[in-house]
Length: 79
Image 1: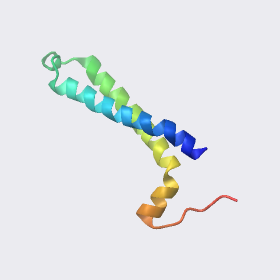
Image 2: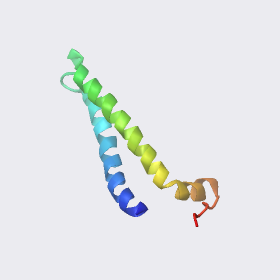
Image 3: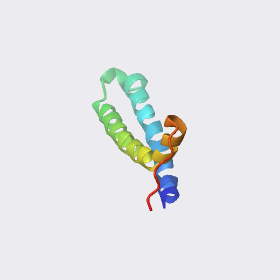
Image 4: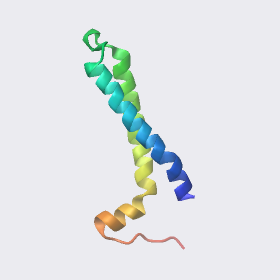
């Protein structure tokens, strides 16, 4: 079940990362940057918040891997 969820979450996380970057690049350096397009700024904020939410879900489902590889501790298995 965890792998099925991660197969869905990981591409969404990658897409949200790219969208957040694209929106801020367009907001700061795009053709409408000199006009101060607030809609691009709002899109950047929304996609950034959604990115953080999806990233937290990603970390939750990968926590046992993180504990093992980063902290060097084996995760407790539920019986």
